[in-house]
Structure formats: structure tokens, C-alpha cells
Length: 285
Ligand SMILES: [Ca+2]
Image: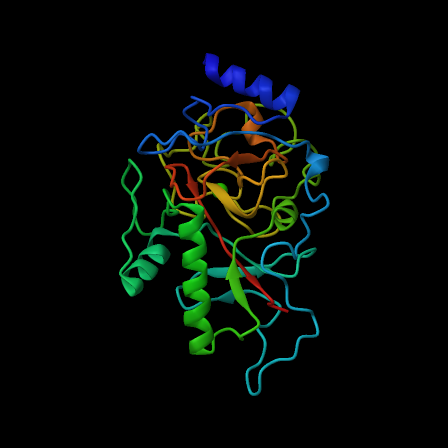
């Protein structure tokens, strides 16, 4: 497709922001036709650069933060929260990562409790599919609600909170530089079949797949690659725009699959049918 080729050229050669791509696998291809997105990429070695520390977004509690009286800290191991979301520690970060993208059932629990409308993508969603069409602002609201609920229930301590992963944390979780090539599966293109939910592979799904339908990465995390692009908790290096990573169910543009690819939006208030999110627990240790 011509627009895709143009986008790829601009992204790969210039590394600058550009007009919204018409490419249907770009995360700017929002249900509802919003065209506010721009795109840029950063070389893999730019990830985790200055200003992208793990403390950039909401601040990590120091490791030696005191626990509240009578409330033990979360153990530094797998954790299942009040919604049945599962978390694992990721060495090299100070957070627990959700092993899955936030599911439809998780978001609906929040929406029911807060009487918030549930946005819908332009395809059917079942409870175990990742929740699509969630704006970054809505993802942050979900995380804030869950933090409040679980702090009140004593599931997490007051110093602990749910938030979006930082870009540097995502790098670690996504095994940037650790796969033997530029892609989550290593080297070579296209992706192998049944590796993840992408458009250009034989994976058995037309739209999103139930979370965990494909093998996890070596850290025990599912669907970082594919299914839905995922919101990052901080802006892009250029322009302060909002960032998604990982590519989605309709991805076929080669650059989008790269571990270091960053897609930037200029607006965090719009949901996209190939963008969702996962959360981490900060202050978990
Ligand atoms: Ca994903």
C-alpha cells in the first residue's frame, strides 16, 4: 500500500514525526475515524534514554519504604489481584507486570463499579479478549480506580499503585536486545506463524485473540507482541506525544514489528480498535 510505504520510509529513514498514516494496521486507524495521530520511531538504542527512567511517570517507592502497620508487602513473586489479573516480577524493573493485556472482563468490572460507559471497537469482544478502543486517559482512570479499590481492601499497600509501564520498563519486559534480532521472535521476516496475533501470520484469529492464546515470552508475559498495541505511561521522546508499543492484531508493516518501534499519538483521549493497555504494580517491592 502506498501510504504504508511512505510511512515506513519516513519512519525508518528520517525518524521524524509525520502525518497520520492511512495504513490500516497503524494504531491511528481508529474506529470513528479520528486522524489525530502522528508517527515516529526511535532507534532501539534510543529506548531508555535520558528522561525515560523507571521513575519518570508516577515515581517508584524506594525499596526500603516502610510497610504499613500489620500489612505485609506483596511478595516478590506472582500475584493475582481482586479481578483475577495475574502479575509477575520482571528482573531489571521494580514493578510487577500484568502477564496479560487488560481484558474485557477487567475493564467491565471497572465500568460497572464506576458507572462508566464502555467504549467498543468495530468487532465483537468476549470477556477474555483484551479490551480494545481504550484511550490512554481511560487506561489511567482504570489504573487509578483499581489502586483505590485494592488499597481500601488492603490488597495493596498505600505506597503501591497500578499504573502504565514506563518506556524503559517496557524495553525490559519486551526483551529489547535479548532476542537475537530486531524482532520479538528474533531475526528474519515475516514473523513465524502462531507466534503472536498479527495480521500477516497464520494465527487463527481475525481480530483480537483471548489473552494468553500464544506462548509467553521468556519472562512469562503474554501478547506484548501483537494482539493490541499498548499504551505506555509516558510520552514519546519527540514532541511529548503519547506512545504505544508492541503492534496489534492487524499489523503487517515491517517496522511495526521491531522491538524498538515507538508509535506516537498526539492525543491521549481517543480509543483505537487496535490499542489497549496493560498495567504494572508500582512500589511492589
Ligand atoms: Ca500487545
